[in-house]
Amino acid sequence: MSHGSSPAAWTAVLLALVGIAIGGIGLIPEPNWIVFTVGCVLAVLAAPVGKIMAVAGLGVKDH
Image 1 (cartoon, rainbow, N blue to C red):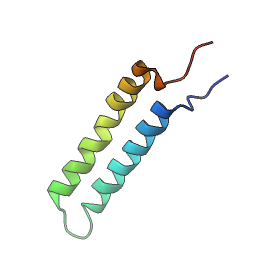
Image 2 (image 1 turned 90 degrees about the vertical axis):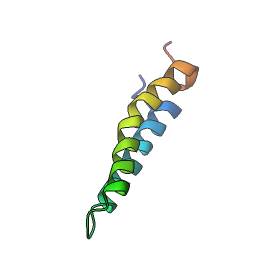
Image 3 (image 1 turned 120 degrees about the vertical axis):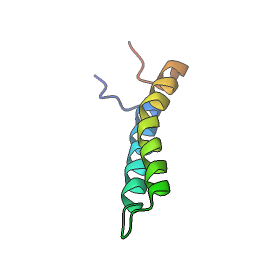
């Protein structure tokens, strides 16, 4: 049984984490809304990127 360990899943999770980290850094010490927005966009794009990669054959293989 697989737990979603695939290149698509790893890429989506890492992209979401990087986006959250960038967004958080953009709020310290004074809010930099451009950096915050870039982080939010990266975090939101993680799901479609993971889905596109899975459809392209990099997701979990069904046996």
